[in-house]
Each structure stands twice: as structure tokens, then as C-alpha cells.
Image 1: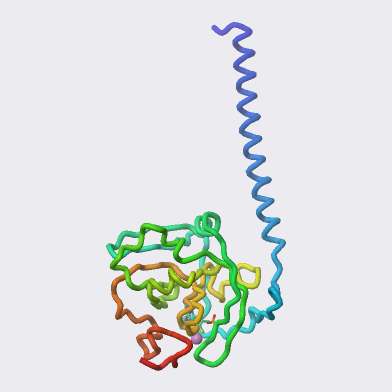
Image 2: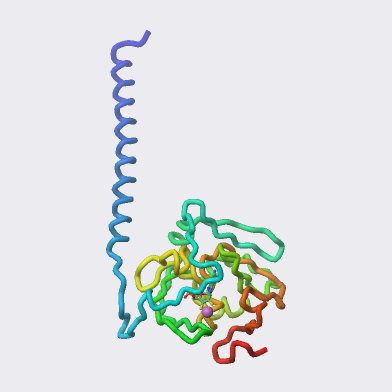
Length: 230
Ligand SMILES: Nc1nc2c(c(=O)[nH]1)N[C@H]1C(S)=C(S)[C@@H](COP(=O)(O)O)O[C@H]1N2
Ligand SMILES: [Mo]
């Protein structure tokens, strides 16, 4: 049998634990609300540092299988190395753990239209991680949710600080614009700007050709050259 004082102490201890649990639950919810409020502040912008931006509606939708809708709860971004080891990341892991970058870049489609957008994203280099690029990795093959693929040289991705965007003109990428991630392949034709990225694959297949590249478009995709050249 417990004595009266012992009973009192057990009750006090029990109440204290209950108090701490409810405090942490409360703080968690308050924290969440703060995050939500921060999201609400973002407004589409039309100008950035004196530069006139295009509207999100200025894109022409001509994706190979039409707009895709990715369910973010089950979404994983896979990073695969040349030995076929892969790691998977959630959307939150990418957004919350990596340094964010902003830049104004123009996308030019081979069909003759272009858009100038303020992109915000993370470096592909940071997503891959410092030690994960073996010397035999020469190209990066990007895979997308609609089956689209494209590839770019490892050196281009690393040296040009190429980002994978999750926001454009200060708002989260809309589904039809590539949510959750679109590659900002600056100085390359639009078909290198892969949307709905699901996998970043390090490869030594320098002759790999993506969706449009295997249908006659230049593999370098350099805008200062023609897109049928090669
Ligand atoms: N996954 C995926 N990404 C894609 C495409 C596509 O069909 N599927 N089309 C490319 C092309 S040709 C262009 S010009 C740009 C911009 O296309 P949009 O205007 O349809 O966004 O997205 C590129 N990224
Ligand atoms: Mo395009």
C-alpha cells in the first residue's frame, strides 16, 4: 500500500507530465500556424529589381502528356548514382534543409515564345550532395512524372549553379507549371527545362538522349546554336 504522501507525489508527477505534453502539442500547432501565415504573405510579383517579369499565364501548355498533378504526401525525389545506389527525399526535406536561391531567367521554347520569370529553388548540386558524384559521372539524366526525360552534363549543372525551382514569381509552382520542381536550365532551350522532376540520375552514358533529343533536337540544347544542329 502507498502512503498518503507518496500518492500525492505520484499525482503531482502525473499532472506535471500531462502539462508538458499539452505544452509541446500546443507549441507544435502554433509553429504550424506561423508557417502557414508565412505562406500566405507571398503574392505573385510582376517586377523584380527593376526587371519586368512575364506572367505565369504566358507559358504555352504543350507538355507531352498534358498537365500532371503530383500528390505531395507520397512524392519522393530519387537521387541515383552511377552504381545504382539511390536515396529518396520528401518535398519538405528538400525545401527545408537546403539553401535557397533566387534568379531571374528566361525560358525560350523552340516554338518561338519565351517567358522571363523570377525563379526560387535549390542547387541541383546541393540536392545531389558533396560526396555523391563519382568521377565517372559525366551526365545527369532527369526523369519526370509524365515519363519525360532529358540530360545535361554534370559540369554544366555544377559550374553554372543550376537550380531546381519550387517557386516562380514568389508563388509555389502551379501543377501545370511543374509542381513540385522544374529545372531552370539557363542558356538551354525549353525542352531541357524538365518539369515534375521525380529522379536525378548520375550517369556515364554520354550518348543518352532524352524525349525530344531522341526525336531530333540537339542534345546540348544550347540556345546560341540551332536546336536541330548536331
Ligand atoms: N516533364 C516534362 N517537362 C517538360 C516538358 C514536358 O512535356 N514534360 N516540356 C518541355 C518544353 S518543350 C518546354 S518549352 C518547357 C515549358 O513548357 P510549358 O510551357 O508546357 O511549361 O517545359 C519543358 N519541360
Ligand atoms: Mo518547348
